[in-house]
Image (cartoon, rainbow, N blue to C red):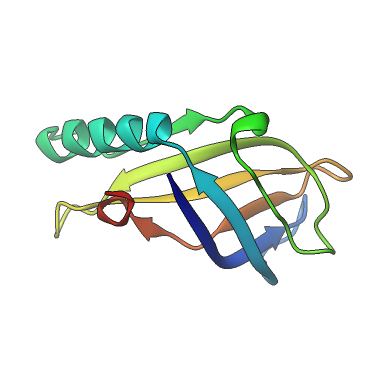
Length: 114
C-alpha cells in the first residue's frame, strides 16, 4: 500500500478555473495499484484508448482532505498515459459533498506505486 500527500485543487460548479486547496492525503491499496498497472499497460499498447477511471470505495481510501474541503461524496482514480513518453500517471478526483465542486489531486506516476 502507498500513501500520498500532495497538492489538491478545487473547481466549484460553474467556475472557469481551479484554485489550490492545500494538501490531500490518500492511500492506494494493492487492489487499486494492480488495476492502475493493468490500465497503464493496456493504454500504452492501444492506439486509441489513453485514459480511464477506476471507481473507489470511499472506505478503502483512508482519505484526509484539507479543512476547507471536508468530505467527498465520491472518488475515482483517473489513469492516463502520455503519448510521447508512454508512461502512466494517475490522480484522485471526486466531488465535495457540500456543493458538488470537483476536487482533484496533482498527478503521480503509476511507477511510484510499485
